[in-house]
Image (cartoon, rainbow, N blue to C red; front, side, top):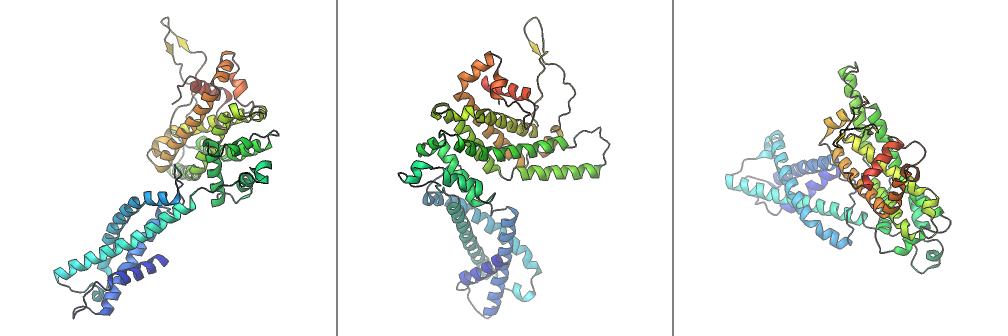
Length: 424
């Protein structure tokens, strides 16, 4: 309602002085026409804003100063304002057929064209102001906030990570404060601007490192569990004698669970990048060996592999374990054995949803996970190669308990593909 009222008042203020009041139109008629058209423009923009969920903050991939970020978004704001004002004009013209006769009026052709041009320019200015306000809101709320005491202070010398960990662990889940804390942590781990803060994670007791890894692995683990439950319950076996109505209902529930799982896509991407970057830096920056001794390296690589497998399965990629009894002919050609009959629960699921919004997010998530794993493999390539040659790769780099998705053998096979740089 506020948007409609704002649009009405704005259009009246902008277009009032542009009208020539003559015998055909009175001031009351002009105000009424502009007010009604403003209500229509505001209604259209409000519906578009809600339908596109534009209140959700979109964090930029590359962090820039606020002024530069605002300047970079000006062309996009102008382009979107042009498109929305054009569609809004068509929408208001369509609704004009339902207006009373007095508001339609009878104008000469020249005056009518002039009125329409003035109305379009006024609606463009109003929507452009809204777009600029929306863009400024995005820039100011997604800029980086540094959760660290001043460098050189007593707190920076004793425990520089406490403010960051408090924001991560004690803030309201999915709040803006928590998102900004994850963004700050990601930039600390990946960049070299504050190496002293990253080095503080590897303190002697290892408690700080465990807390950081735990707070980042938890969202990835929960995401993997949610998607794996959807895959296991996805009704894609045609042999099941289910009614069409029941199958459709189950598919709708599966869709909703998948969409909800990808709601925190930005947070999941940060978490995967954080744990991978910390694991890579632990190879040379961990003087006390807390990452290796605590078992966090194994937990990180196992969680990332399980998450990658579940995302690839969701996208329809086959992840069946290759049989060790593969057949080879005299020429040395390897022949794949027949499938053991295990039903791929994601084949039909992915086939019907390919091209949807969540599929694009799944593709991006798989790329982020794959890049993160490759980073860890590249840093620990010598160690993993020695373990693979000794037949201890699964023992040294895969958790001993049941993985979040798949089996230990499947994770080990996937890790070998990364080690051979054949994972794609």
